[in-house]
Structure formats: C-alpha cells, structure tokens
Image (tube, rainbow, N blue to C red):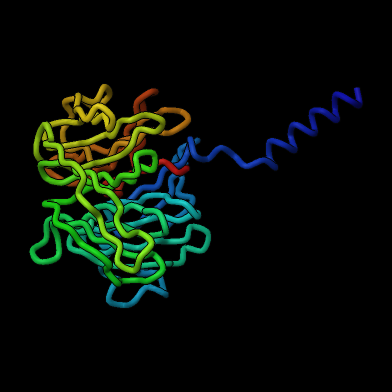
Amino acid sequence: MRRLVFSVLCLLWLSTALPRPAAAQSLVACGWDEVFILDISGAPAKTWRWKASEAAELPAAYRDKFRTTDDCKPVDGNRVLITASSDGAALVDRATRRVLWWAQCGNAHSAELLPGDRVVLACSVREGTGNRLALFDAKTPERELFTTPLVSAHGVVWDAARERLWALGLRELHSYRLRDWDSASPSLELDMRYALPDEGGHELSAVPGTAHLIVSTHAGVWRFDRDLRTFRPDPDLRGRHDIKSAVIHPTTRRLAYTEAERPQWWTRRIRFARPEGEVVLEGERLYKVRWVP
C-alpha cells in the first residue's frame, strides 16, 4: 500500500514539476497595437503581452510605428519577431519583454531570422520605402545592410534544408541565396521566381516536416512544393478568400488560421482544422497567429 501511495505521489509531482507541452496549446497573436500569447488549453487566456508604447528602451520615434502589428513570429532564443504595417519592426525577448533590436521599412508585413542573427523584412506597398526586401543585423538596430526590389512583399520564410530564403510578392514567389554572408556586406541573390496561381500574395508559411509552403492569395490558398516547384490547392483551405495567416503545428498537425471578416482587414476569430474549432475574442482585431514552439 505504501508503495502504491508513493508511486501516485511521484506521478503527481512529475505532472507539476515537468514543463507543460505549451506548444500545442499556445499561439502568438497580433493585429492591433498589442502582441500577445494566448493559451487555448482551456478558456482562452493571455499569458504574455507586449506593446511598443510600454517599451522604455524603444526610441520615442518608434512608439507609434506599431499601431497595426501584422506578424509575430517566435524565433530561436525565446524571442519574438514583430512587424507592423505602420512601418515598425522589432525583436523582443519573451522573458523580459525587452526590445533587443528595432528598425523600420515601408508597410513592414513580415520578418524572418536568418543565419548569423540577421533579419530580413518584407516591406509591402509604400511609396519610397516599400516594395522590397530589407536586410539587417540583429546586433545593430536600424542600420540597413542590403535591399532588393519585390513588389508588395508580404512574406518571408527561411529554408535551412535548401539554404534558401523564400519571399512572397504580389504576383510571384521568389527564392534567394545568401551571398557574402560572413562579410560586412551580405546580400540576397535572386535564385528562382515562380508565378502565383492568382495575384495578391499574402500569407507564406512552411508546413513542418514537408517540402510544402502555404501560400494565400486574393482568390484562394495553395500549397507550393519546394522540390517539385509546383502549386496545388491547399487541402484544408482551398477556395477560401482573405486568409491572413495559416500555420500547422509541427507535432499535433493542427491548422490554425485567420480569415478577415469583410469589409474589414481583421477578424475576432481564430479558426482551426484537424480538429475543427474556433476561438472568438470580442474586441480584438486579429491579423496573424503563429504556434508557439
């Protein structure tokens, strides 16, 4: 009997002492001036939040550049890459909420962490400062290292297996090689370009463990095979319009996505497939969600 009680107590201790598998239950969400982590294991609850207006280390000129956040990617080092259509970009430490790096480009719509702690921004439509990719070093705020044109740049994904950067624009999906990466003047060299099935490239995310990228456009959602270099309709979201984000969890394979509620650019809902579900956050203006690894 004592041995049974001891075993039960050990199991109870382990259940509280070991880290909880939060990745399958938590999402980073953004859209308005707040970026937050949402625990959906029970009743939806915010477990972490960040606002530029509360970041003391962020230069004053940047405080209003995060009014409309549009991407929020968890990256290595327990950090979050944040971009905003109001031109701001930031790398934030999750543990301290401290801004580690910041920069700006016209209508910044997505960012990606590249080897060597460099950051690439997708700068969307903005006269003079947009329609391009911009490269930075995360150790040095603001200083731009390189830029290359891409009309209505909306998404960027680093592909470590193929050593390519994938970038999504208005009518094309591009791949780039990293050049002179160990020098003070790194650059991105256009490798290949692929016409989209429809214009209006918007969301770009990798399907974990596969060769596929999820690509959304004005008229639908597609899977791009990075090995075969072909597009096909997405099996979960084919035919849907105004998909702002679509991400698949690497372990559970659950799909989370956001779909604008016309005529607005935002939504109150985070939707799921495999299994289906929905989280409604009244009063929020959601644009993108990303699973927390």
